[in-house]
Amino acid sequence: MVRLPRCPLGPPLRAAPGGAGGRRGSRDSRAGRVGPVAAGAGLGAGARRRRGGCGGCGLGQAVEVIYPPHSKLTDKEKTNICYLSFPDSNSGCLGDTQFCFRFRRSPGRKVSLCCFLDQLDRDLPVYLKKDSAYYYGYVYFRQVRDKSLKRGYFQKSLVLISKLPYVHLFRTMLKQIAPEYFEKSEAFLEAVCSDVDRWPPPVPGKVLQLPIMGVIMKLRIPTYRDKPGTTPIVQKKYVFYDVKHIKIPQSVFRCFCPVFFHIQMLWELVLLGEPLVVMAPSPSESSETVLALVSCISPLKYCSDFRPYFTIHDSEFKEYTTRTQAPPSVILGVTNPFFAKTLQHWPHIIRIGDIKLPGEVPKQVKVKKLKNLKTLDSKPGVYTSYKPYLNKDEEIVKQLQKGVQQKRPTEAQSVILRRYFLELTESFIIPLERYVASLMPLQKCISPWKSPPQLRQFSQDDFMKTLEKAGPQLTSGLKGDWIGLYRHFLKSPNFDGWFRSRQKEMTQKLEALHLEALCNENLVFWSQKHTEVETVDLVLKLKNKLLQADRERLPVKTDTLKKLQTHINDIILALPDDLQDILLKTGTT
Image 1 (tube, helix red, strand yellow):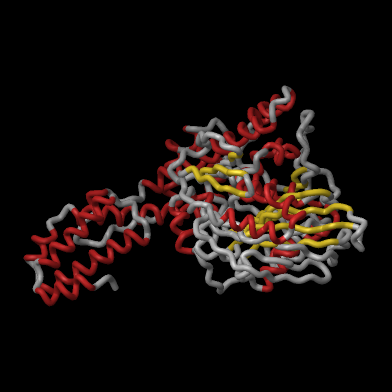
Image 2: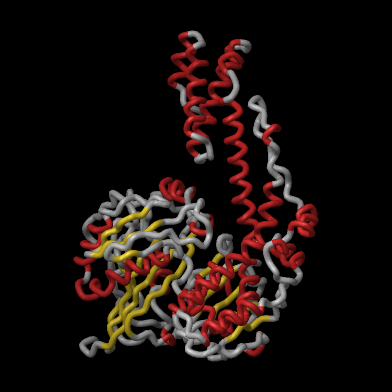
């Protein structure tokens, strides 16, 4: 994301690589002068632009313009953005195309707005939290015939870079501004930035009104308190876009339609963090399918790397395609035929054909052997030797098939599929939530005069013993090797990420309970029975506790914090004048 001073939700619209010219050639040379990289669009108050621009043109892609102009990108980041902002030459994307990508941020750089984004993160559900190591790129690409140009084609992309995974919001925003930008060029971007300057700060749970070039977008950013799978009711005004499903494509069924007989197996592969490749004919299908896969385990956060659109020019190409080590835990979306050979050693490959609205019942496609996948022209299907742990749920397949026969709207099919994934994930995670909650010390073990107690260690054996009476069978009718699935999951990056998050939440809860225990004590009376040195030490520790509560946003009531501050003031006033002066001026260590 381009740094946008005081623009909380961050990203600038980057003027993107684009260009005038004919179709790019092979995978090694995509010709064309690159057009502007759109300037910064962030959600936030007080964003300010600086006039001017930077750009360049030459062979291949190049960045013409960046907004805001003061945004700093490393050469490596610019190269990644350039190549990821264009479809592969084989994709044949004539007209306007939208897709997104994700790339690794160069290490060692300070990023502005971190404090604000950290504060925003605390109120978001886990699956919407930012990953500071990555940027998202949202692309609006145009390729049309133009005989006035030497190569016969106009090619240009407008790209918005952000640290935030608000796919639907930024896609909608680009759809609103990109067509006019291609006609009016840079002056139009300045007007867009002027509108963004007036955007309110992002507050999860609050309905925000975002003006953008004559249209008002109304959205609500979900909070961690929202019940999964629910969508708040918001009154429409001009145009309304809800960010509730920002990581779930509008039509998740359309993405899975070519392989929906295997959706349960795909859910297992994503849950377990298995290496997975999506081979698609265009960046749109590739990015939509990868995002649909990542979202299928919601409300669990997918904790491994994923690339909605990945090219051979990506800086991680060698890392992810090497045969000298096992494929990493990552989901890659690709369109270049070269990957059919390069990634043939990967254990799980999904081949997606052109995604169209289903007009007839899809034929059941058997899982195919990897050796049968030789080119990107291979038939659509799932190529893997993986054997699912759970028995196939025929009911969901029949329900979706019936919907196709009855010409049920694709969005309605998507709602059914999302609900199925949600219930399946919740059935799987509830036993883990129940066991982890039991690791929490009892409240009677919390003493104000001792450090907060530690959580008990997670024991795989103890957890497995709980499954006999309190396993997923309580909420799911699916049969199969649930024990084997849990054993595999406990070794995955998704479990590690989930458990670290729960561990942090429970540790903060213990700190909050410890604060409440301190507030319920007569601290002034305690200080009168102890030495001045011990009393001063107590005051400093209490001040540190207050700062920790504010810094980590501990789940403590405001009245509790005020009461503790009153205790601190009363203790200080009972001390000699010289100590009072020192302690009243002292913050924390």
